[in-house]
Image (cartoon, rainbow, N blue to C red; front, side):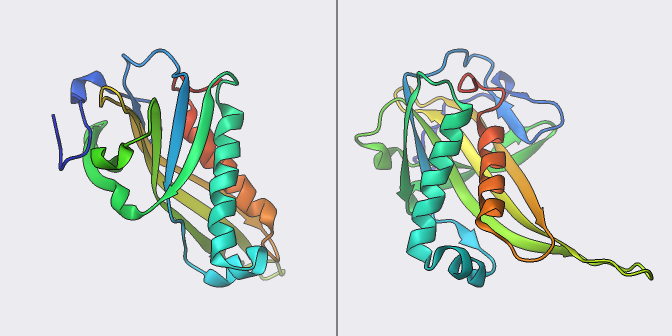
Length: 205
């Protein structure tokens, strides 16, 4: 099945949703690839001041996110699997509805014409959204508000050679702080979604 010039060769019956999570893995995918490439679109941050405070400018932030996501995915993947990361434009992907449980989920699939020179497996991460939340404290005895940095991504894992969709889903993580947000909060949420992307797949250690 071909959808909007992106590579898809998947029948819904071939996929199983992992209990309690927003992901599906093709049960026919049983062996880790020799290598894979992570394709990531430009991350979106709701509050641009957070980027300025911790990274100086947006270009430095984008590169840091790409590098740290690559490092984090690598830390949860089999050590003998080579991997690389590429920061790409949004137009590399087509957002497609695929089955999940009793419903559907919108995931990014790569446009075939964008994959020239890329072999093996591609992990497609788009969109990638960061935002803050604040849980207000209402105790009469006095307390402090609790803040969190949140990250949500949608992703798919696709075989370049045969066009099979191997896995897909959505991953979310949050990191709490009381006063000022630090670089450690960014690291924590990226590590959290990286772990969820590879878990229950042959990429996982």
